Length: 205
Image 1 (tube, helix red, strand yellow):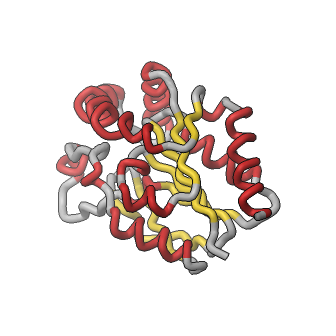
Image 2: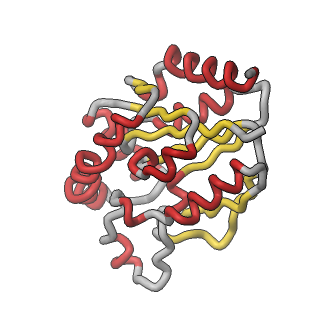
């Protein structure tokens, strides 16, 4: 049986990863594979760190779509994959990979996930996680300061020059392709329960 593929999109700091992981953890009757689209950034190893910092990481061109599509296709065919891992401090793909086994349900999340028609065609359920812009900015600040070791000025400059404009140009318009829109991010337990119920119903069928 072809696995169910659940796509979860939304702006940076919207809570999409929290929703994706809560959905994955709530499906306890089947095996679940989890993929984060952030792992599929292009690997600009030939550029210096300063040059990599100036890349627009929120534009669709920053992603290795072909590899992501190949891996989703492999999982859809019941095959395991070697998912890349990304080092956000160095802006480089790590040398190690992570084995993701075949599963009954595949949950994949990413800011631009629903902006690509090829990815959308592979998703059985498409979810968009929504949150106010100020909430998303605060969450991004906390994450990048604590987890990615970036200075405050760099975070704010990136937000104003690329994150916010790309959200308006690519991320927000992709909302219209969603089957389910989840307001309040990962705190919306009712919406998460509804998504899980829909998945479990499909699995029983």
